[in-house]
Length: 206
Image 1 (cartoon, one colour):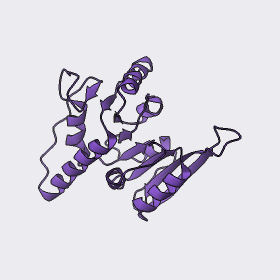
Image 2 (cartoon, rainbow, N blue to C red; image 1 turned 60 degrees about the vertical axis):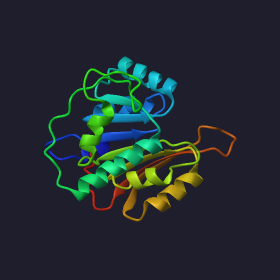
Image 3 (cartoon, rainbow, N blue to C red; image 1 turned 90 degrees about the vertical axis):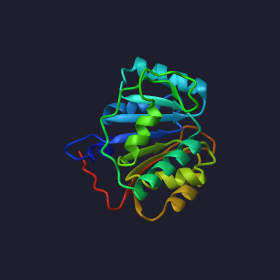
Image 4 (cartoon, rainbow, N blue to C red; image 1 turned 90 degrees about the horizontal axis):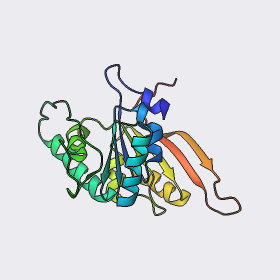
């Protein structure tokens, strides 16, 4: 993650989009390496746990969005396509927002919502995306969205689904790093972490 975060211009840190964030364990670990983090999770209880973990660990640049990953990706894809079909306006600095924002508007915020901020920035900021999907892997629209990012961090609990997703994402990416974790001894279950980098994207190794 540090190597991914170091592949930045001299002017800005990269942003991180995290899908299926769960209780925010990856969010807490990676938050300090990015300018802004948006963590998406559909389970309200896990969102509450993620917000608590962020506060407990002093991570103040991350927002948790309670939403379906698939529906969020669909909205973001539509926004990116709209931006490509018309001139982009000059983006004003994003307003600060409180955590605990929901896509359905069930939680009030003091300023612009996390999703609104991300939608404004994401058309130009396809830096890094992290996915930690269920055993079935990624749906078609999520695959399409993550393929727009220069760096993909994929945490998988099903190597077969991971392989299918990697084949679908396409040959524009190379495997920069891969690690296998046997967390469930004496069983066939394996965890796999892989860093995919777009072949044309540079990576500064520190």
